Image 1 (cartoon, rainbow, N blue to C red):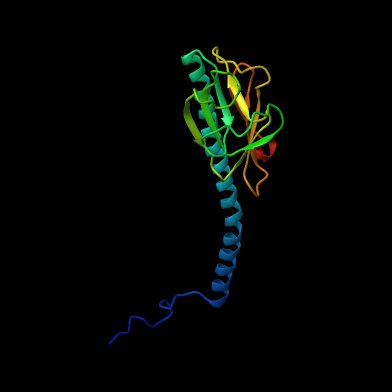
Image 2: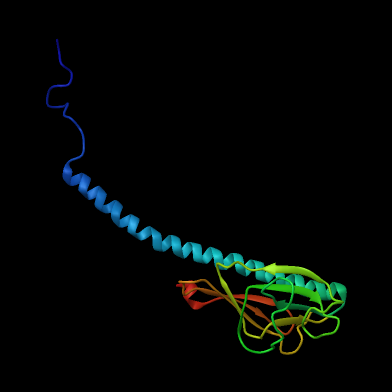
Length: 182
């Protein structure tokens, strides 16, 4: 009987200990590189999602002012029912916002005014507005004098930030910081 497994051409094939250790070392190095890249991907994703929500809200505010031919106010709201304050200057963090026709032009929701949109921003990012607690769109789609400014969106543990700039004409422009392009 011939044994087909013997002879010089039929050796057992497998990994040596050195080859196995080399593979494990390479795998360990690649695994250590993945979490920072994944964390960065998540931060960019969160920034993009919040930026999209915010620009959509601003577009809705502007178009509502144009369609209704009335002043529409977007104010910071922590509880989703009342405006947080009426400060017109300074940088403040926004956790949510109210969109309403401001009949008495006091930048707060009064008894005779109806809120037609409530925005709750993701807690995964911080939104800072450098013009106080409100933004007012006039009937022609422009913003009330002094209401133009910049929303800055940041995520924790990241140097990345996005900016949403509102011009005096009421138009919105998105800007990514220089570190975003690194």
